[in-house]
Length: 466
Ligand code: PLP
Image 1 (cartoon, rainbow, N blue to C red):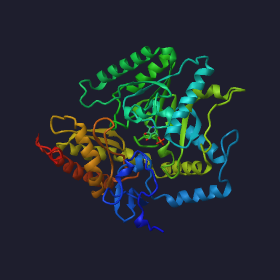
Image 2: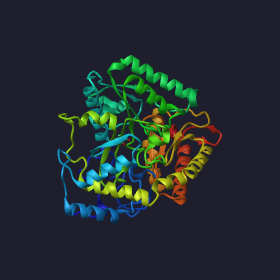
Image 3: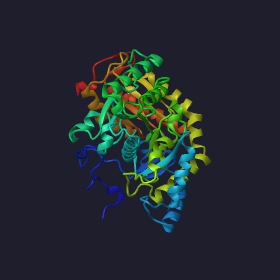
Image 4: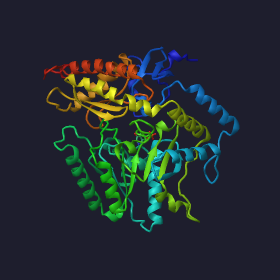
């Protein structure tokens, strides 16, 4: 019998992880066993500030367990499970109503899933059935953006724009064109000039694919992979115009930006987007249970309600009563405890704190919105990119351990350029935000020293020396 202290990787295959990295004489696996407010604690009792909200999920942090347990207990004692396959249960119906009330104007049909990838795939299948019902079955193609992450199941993976994640798995399930994302760092075009350029590229991609064959455009309001890539002004209204001009369905993937992350319940509202479909998961339950939802406009869903037509898609656990009850409670807590308001009140403070990191030579850019931010790591004042070897040694070798030592959970990532990302629980106060940025400063200063960077210039790299 193992005690909690003894727990190691054992038989578990960890997701998106080098599974051979752990064990005696290697990296110690971080095993978290307890949470409190914005903090999590490992099996040795060490405390970490969760600067990433458990992969963008824990919107309300970790102190609502008892309240959630009460509604979970009530639901489980009443009805543990029923599907939404031709029947229903009150929790899912009530949650659908609530989401329809909260969603942007015109979006009022809700399809439940168990997570983000399923939401994205379900959106695709709903889009396809919309076009078929409209006499346009030839609309089989999608347009997504470079480096965007939309999930890993084979349909969602086709939309994902990270080549390394796709290559081992053969031809994509959906014929997808990937266009530029909205990364403005190092881009000579800025603001409206950048918008014009990106929309022109998008339109050309539609034309090249043959407009009559394009079913869907999918994008995140603020793209996560690549490091919190905010859209330039007018970008989303421009996407809407293109989608309307060419009869394409516009999907906002809000698996991360949904439920307050950008300081609005839906990130679409924050960036001026009016999508036809919003995909969600993660924050819907603040991760107190696994659940996703696809929010569909009445226009796109209308054919699915026609007499005699069957929605050819279903997921056994989609809309599970336990998860639905927890999601309802989560939304109640959002309103009662002013969760989104907290983000709006403190996002300026968070930005100001993060901007001070620019004084470190390793920090080239600071970007984001709401409680969703990234700093880009560079080789000093020239803003030169880290090369592959430096990224490997710094982001995968040095930083994970150093972040842990500093008591901070944050994400060092290089699916695009090298970034350190944070997404604090939406209930964090100023002291917690300061704690996060202080720890980032400490780690980034050390990371800069690893690169041999001193304020004002580049010197020999400790990484290339070692
Ligand atoms: N879409 C976006 C924008 C995401 O960030 C993610 C996951 O991080 C997904 C889809 C896939 O979600 P899941 O991991 O729940 O399948």
